[in-house]
Length: 291
Image 1: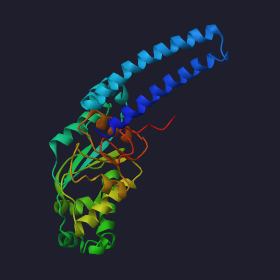
Image 2: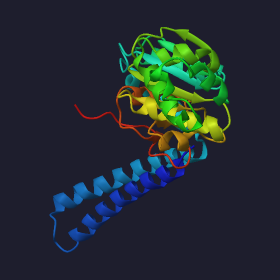
Image 3: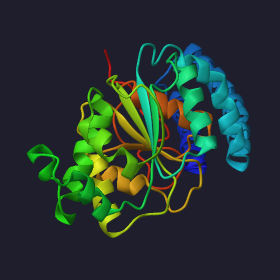
Image 4: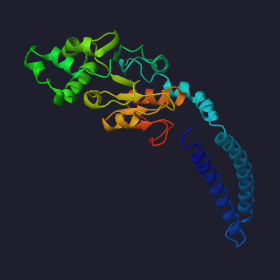
């Protein structure tokens, strides 16, 4: 688990500092700085602090040896963190590649635990994209579609599709290109979304598909609603750096309670960033803005 031993060391240092502070106070008493009554209180505080520190350090040492304990302990707080977090929110899920049942179940549980209904729409994209096929579908359909013709416009096409996915409504591009791009889809395509969850189930793409996906992520991130890329713990190669580069938040451990909580908090409007238990994250959990 991410930096648990670092946290163990940090917390241990706090307890040591507490004891040192008290011992310093006791030492000062020898020079007459404190009264006898104060000295007695300080000694009691010292003894209590030593006992508390010993107890906490044993717990922290065990936590450092068994990372699963951290997750088990968090489960106790999980219901309070999630309660009503996403009530009334409309969330969509977009898979880059085929659907992953395990991740899908984790997302479903997140929404349920946070008081939201099931995902409004779930879609999987067929990748790699066929750039020539997309041009063929766009050709001759009017000037509103002609501007997306050509390999150089794949990022713009992806961005427009990302915005349509979030906004709902008529979605003319998805209707025109759906047979080229969509593997599976379900749910309401017209309803606007309050948040989007992205799951990349394929390896990093190159060339035309990479340009298209960069635009797609940008469109999702620029839509004004939270957009969060998620994956299970230990997935390699991770998509988190790509998500961050295109303006999406990310959660790298959605299979864990902490990951589901991070996803729920981000969809509720918490500070965007990269969260989870892997190296390079901003924190394990984001915080909601005050007020």
